[in-house]
Length: 101
Image 1 (tube, one colour):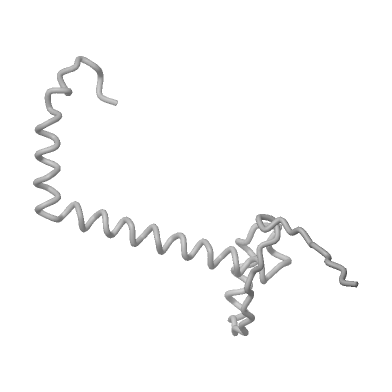
Image 2 (spheres, one colour):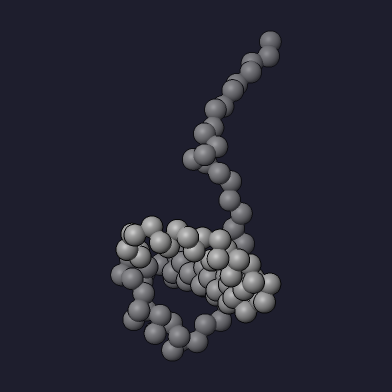
């Protein structure tokens, strides 16, 4: 006789995660400064504080890359020409009598 057992798992709530353990050497002065600016709920959990800090760092770097790409586009003569065409095409709508928003 064979018994079949079915286990149901809500995958949205129980996603398997991969955690890599790394050892890092941090200067004590840096840890002291970090402790002085960290939110109270993270001061006692260095692991969580490092995770949050790295997430913020990644977000900042992505934002900087985006801003740099936008600045590069603003300097591009082809983009400037296209913007001039769009502005010209929509210039009639500027005469709609509405205040600028």
